[in-house]
Length: 327
Image (cartoon, rainbow, N blue to C red; front, side):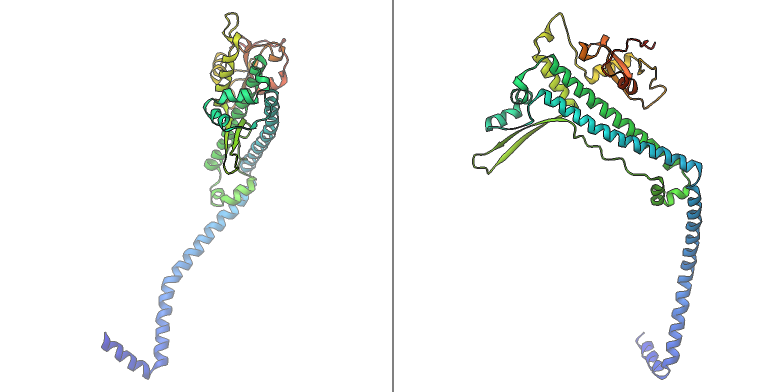
């Protein structure tokens, strides 16, 4: 190898131009052999995508695509309406909380702070409830808040399921080019992700403690979500003496009771007759036949299933003219 290189250098020195041209020629042939097929491949791929691009643009004008676009726009509008409903619901829950309690944050002593962690409900009543008063009106307020919790969660689940079903349909049935140019497709659909659902409507209380030197501070935040508010309602119910009376046994509007009423009514609105059998994503609510505001109580015989539309129409009225649906 060494001898070959020595000979090559000697010859190159004699004919440098000729050998330079030869080397460049060989390099050119090599490059041509490698890059021409690659260049042809890139042209083919480019043509492939170009064809799909123009076909996809044409697809965006078809009835199928426009129908999906319209449905998706409708779902986004419904979710935005739900967002507005959430604002109203937060205001309602806050107003109900204000009827029950004075404020929701207390700067406390170290003893109170520690005890609030051990006996949560007792200390909420002692330091936040107005005059520590617990009676039937208290339970009615708690139940109205629990009902709102339930309606919010049902509505959110229904809207999310419908949106996901539509997105699944889009992924399975749309023209192939719509997937290749997915970013453009979603832009054409006007699709956005559903707004983030924040559960910031829960009742909450906090016991704060700051050391005398202001060097340390602690906070015991108590969030009454669905499960905890139901536990709290049970705790409150146990404090009402007449609950144990033989004359009157009151029930809490718990998820179990709600479900038992829905099963009894076969998931059917007792006013208009629509059922989950006909509409899978039907929002059903449990209604007091005799409204609480007019002395109605939470017992099986005073409860019925209503679709959300009929329940909104009824409000605090009695559906005297309603003929119960036969189920």
